[in-house]
Length: 236
Image 1: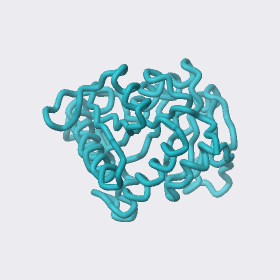
Image 2: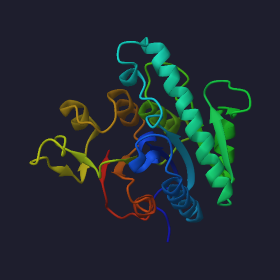
Image 3: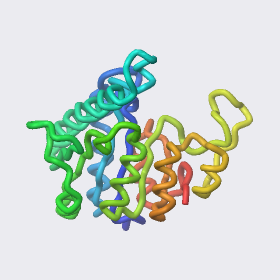
Image 4: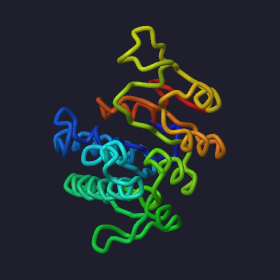
């Protein structure tokens, strides 16, 4: 089956890697996620991945006013590097070629991020893991994902979340919340919907990158999105 997108960046939350454990890793689930990504590459899709750090450290939220914002954000960057190392090793155990590229120089952890080289790796069928966010504080991994998607000329940004799409309100708090099948960037910004942060939404809008939000609870949803199945919410 032909994929509807040729090159994508997938954003995976750190908390998702912990599954029911809430912190650290649930390696059974991580293996399922990696296998689902490998199935996407077998469809001929070039894949880059941005992983959050919330299974270890949720930046300023975990700082609780005790850690200065810049330090809290840098701690979050280090958490994403740990996640990328772990996921890259799972990929390799499953037989895939994965490359960790970091926005911060950390000797032995990964290769310094370079746009041209990242594209070369993706074209060669390697899964590229983008670690350490943008390398700068005050920018979330959502923004990193939108930025990397723009830089590598991705056809779409896939947001693999703990919810199955974009809602008019928090479905856990509002039983009347309505899920959107499709919504515009401007409406997301106007209504301040919790899809991703406003910087990431604006970046995707300015570069005309469609964003597909879906649940990662079933990792095969990635392949379903790439096959053109209408699941989750498309922001465009």
